[in-house]
Image (cartoon, rainbow, N blue to C red):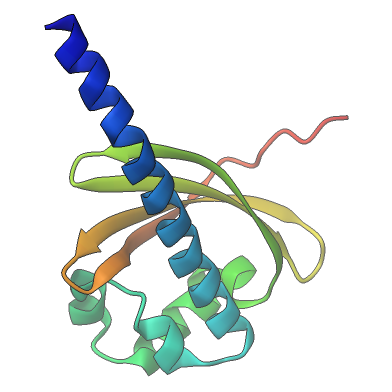
Amino acid sequence: MLRLTALLALLAVPVVAQDRGAIEAVISDQMDAFTERDLNGAWTHASPMIQRLFQSPENFGLMVRQGYPMVWDNEAIRFMELQEADGGWLQDVLVEDASGAVHMLEYLMIETPQGWKINGVRLLPAPDLGV
């Protein structure tokens, strides 16, 4: 039994690494799309649930511009912890906004037949960036 558990754990490692790269690519692509004001491009990375909720790329963009200005005008991002969650993965992303302020966001990622999609984002408490 111990050997089976160890084998399953070893087999899971490449999948997690592959998923990590795909998840980071989706978030990066959406961030780039917002920077370029490409609402249609950003919209393609939203999950079906998010798309039903906002109905159009324009409504989605308005929500991001008003509710997540650090995403709308991001200067830099850094991927932090990735952890499995019920039905998906939670990816923490450190985002520097246009004024240089740093924010921590948690992305809920789900795998769909069309690939990884963003199913929600929440602002986490400000990170402690002491030297």
